[in-house]
Amino acid sequence: MLLRYRYRCYPEPGQRKLLAKAFGCARVVWNDALALNRQLHEKEDKLFDAGALMKRCITEAKRTKERSWLSDASH
View: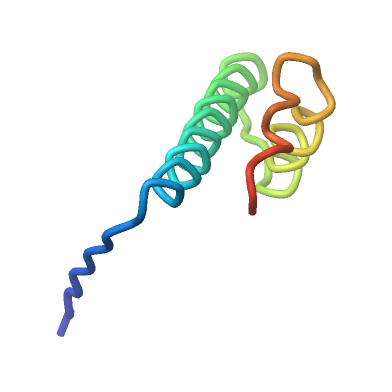
């Protein structure tokens, strides 16, 4: 038997900004990871493991100039 729960939250304006920033960062990291996996799959017919993918898309991306803003988002 499957159960379904539905939640609703009403964030205050400051919280809305933080949530939008966090979701925006998650979207960018997801898209980067998807692109990397597609490139590797096309070249070598294999995929990254989760640890390598996180390291490459999050940790290393924070050190680049164009993705340094990822460090500003909370975890």
